[in-house]
Length: 205
View 1 (cartoon, one colour):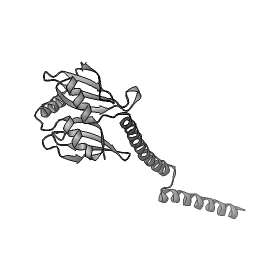
View 2 (cartoon, helix red, strand yellow):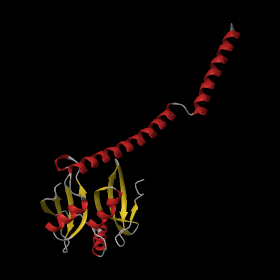
View 3 (cartoon, helix red, strand yellow):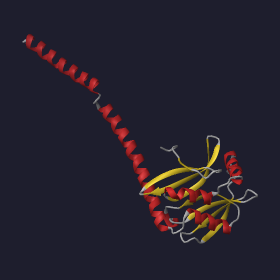
View 4 (tube, helix red, strand yellow):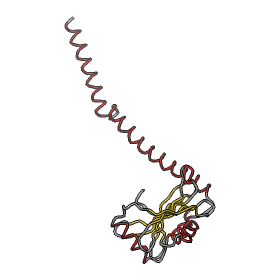
């Protein structure tokens, strides 16, 4: 009887040890599965967000017959100054309209709204006192630039439909940052202020 108990105990211990060893060696335990699941989920979420953004951009593009360059030109005819950004709205009642930010010589900022047919719907002064040194550096660089927001949009149009253009400072240099949509894929580009050369922006890869 004791002999049978000893054998049973040894067998159970061996099985338990083998199971533990299998978990430890195989890395197939709950923690490993959780880690793998988490990694897959993060990638999936990121891909879903990118796909959703691209879908919103496509919807906005279909809602607007006006290009980024045309929207900037219309905004500047209404409100003179330097266009520092233009963005195609992709949400709600404003989908298909353009928001163009214009800075006048005295530093005052205006948000000009341009419809999908090219009509200026209105302009209001931006009274938020939130400009910082980066904003001032960007504006100073734009005043001496050989390419403006309209020309940057035209240059990047060869890469797809432009949905956003704006001045951006990075690594001590200011350039135009342009977002495009083509074949359902959203991409970002840099356009040099001095030469107008277009290069892919890899910062968000």
